Amino acid sequence: MKRFLIMTATLAAFAAPLSSVAAADTNKADKREAQKECRAERGTTDATREAFKARYGNFGACVSKAAREAKAERKQARRSAAKDCREERGDSEESRAAFREKYGTNANNRNAFGKCVSKNAKAKRAEQDDNKRNAFGKCVSQKSHEAR
Image (cartoon, rainbow, N blue to C red; front, side):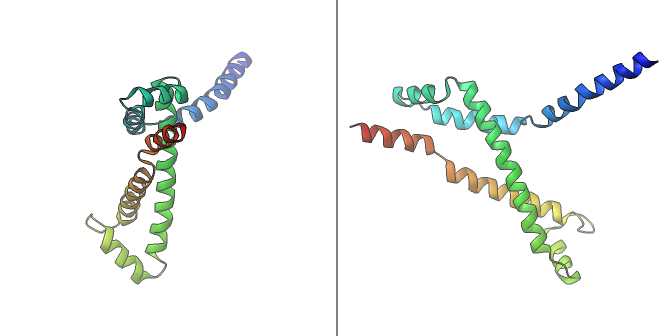
């Protein structure tokens, strides 16, 4: 019995860190987005491919880094969107009713907060993506012009 308790405690100690590592993994959407970004960053010319190889070493390293960044951006956008929706919802019953009417889609409009967060998070992610699009290409272009 004592041996069983020790084994159970040992397994539980190892399981806790593993579950936190699994939660830190990126999802398929993050990886797809990262692959798309890395393909664009790698480019098709010899100069962009050389710069890409010097920066990352290989395509997989780029995808891993970009996927982690995409996950962090997604989480930040969601947190920020939730904060914005809480502020928009307000505290009075009238403001909450108007909020439910604006965003709610089910029979009693009680899904309004989730719909608001989802809509705002998507908009924030699109804004983040537009802000960083082609940054690597611009950097390579700038460095090649400086080298002349």
